[in-house]
Image 1 (cartoon, rainbow, N blue to C red):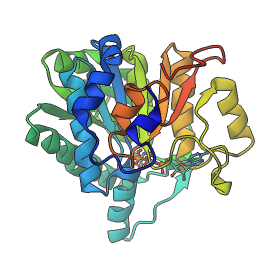
Image 2: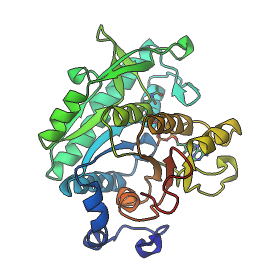
Image 3: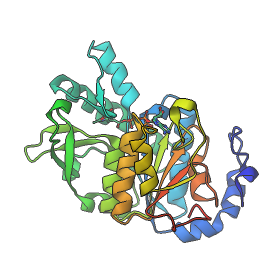
Image 4: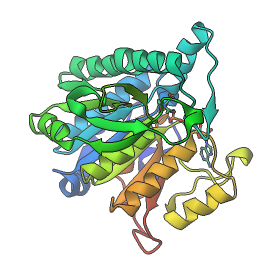
Length: 304
Ligand SMILES: Nc1ncnc2c1ncn2[C@@H]1O[C@H](COP(=O)(O)OP(=O)(O)O)[C@@H](O)[C@H]1O
Ligand SMILES: CC(=O)N[C@@H](CCC(=O)OP(=O)(O)O)C(=O)O
């Protein structure tokens, strides 16, 4: 099986799912029963057709026995609502500087708007999704990050895996917005990649897959350079030191490093702008994006 077969790089709009399924059988068998944490980045939420396609792929994964957990972001939509309210968006190392006005908007947009839109889309397709923030069932317990400059940004202290397992075992797809709460129930903004990484660790997921708006990790974003297909923790650290990774990619690679160090078998950063990117990454040998592993002798020849 190789990527050309699926016309990677061209529109995969008309991709025949039945064809994929028959060829993907070994992977379906391998991953059936496994949990895969998928993070849907705000950078790819504007295209409704793409949104439906991502949701359909997640439903398909659940139909073949894989247990998907969906974590979503929504950075650009938060920016646009803050803009409407004349609040300037500010970031430090890819993390939003979140003051008391900003946290209210962040929670409204992520929990009230985006989370419910995704839940409705999944439900419309005949599956059952349950939308949560970190407040529901005390799912994400956090405290204020030490860096006071970033304001109400939460540092995750504990994930209540019981609530996630209960939802999955009852046959529902959990859809999680990246809001945490402290012991007093106060809201904190948490980067959605970070939430996805911590949930993947706590639930012993098989994979963490981050869907974003680039082909994966590029060798040098400033020079529109090539996709790095496979990296280990040391490679990623070098890219950060050389400043070849910046902005929103920093929390992504950091959460992957942490998850890999804690035993996650593999993390993937893939192009969510490609139709059926999830299926292509999970069900083909080479996949389509960057695969991050713990050490260089792991998975040299295959995506899995
Ligand atoms: N080396 C790199 N490779 C790919 N993307 C990078 C790199 N360094 C920085 N980036 C930036 O990271 C962005 C993805 O992060 P972000 O905008 O937060 O997306 P999302 O909303 O999907 O989480 C890319 O659009 C790109 O501008
Ligand atoms: C603390 C922090 O930065 N929180 C993020 C939460 C949303 C997010 O992560 O969205 P993306 O996945 O689209 O980047 C924010 O406020 O933008």
